[in-house]
Length: 256
Ligand SMILES: [Zn+2]
Image (cartoon, rainbow, N blue to C red; front, side):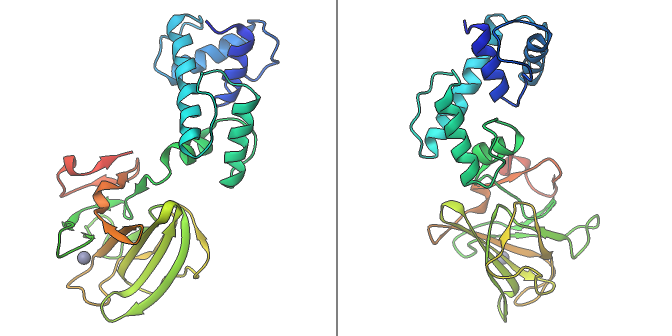
């Protein structure tokens, strides 16, 4: 079982649950940290550091360490936070424009675990045409709640590479994302306000649904490229908490 000193270090690293001195003394702040850790991980909240709590604390740290290794680092996956784990996390934070504090918090968690878990580009998800050999993307329809010009969001952090118009696509935007992904948003109502070469963040508004170009009615044609080949967006997109799925078989979409 981890000694109290190590528990404090792990619990400080993990969401800053332990805010006291690293002194190896099991005082109120330490017990409070046990409680918050137990609560966050659906364990019995008895403030007692038993075998289940110990195992869980080791496992969550191991998950973080192995996820860092997936990002190209090479650290020992032992569930014990030391200088190497902290400094590796800091390096990851600094490369991802996060606050560099060596603490695994919400923003770091999102970046580390949800990168390239793209979200749907609309908050009301009605798929009117699926991906197939003749249609290498998905069409998303409108509804009464959000209207014919519902807001379109970027599916992931990225850089705007095109914001243009042509007769087929109408007003359209192309965004490139980390790891060689690229997303496209066609038939927008108006030209997007986004400037080429500017950064966008996941969820940022791109524009509004429209029917410009070759479109028979308002919809968003969305497609996704991986290494310059089109892929089925439904294999990559996830529904987030404030999005609704309607008129779609719920087994066909994935949830964050
Ligand atoms: Zn389409």
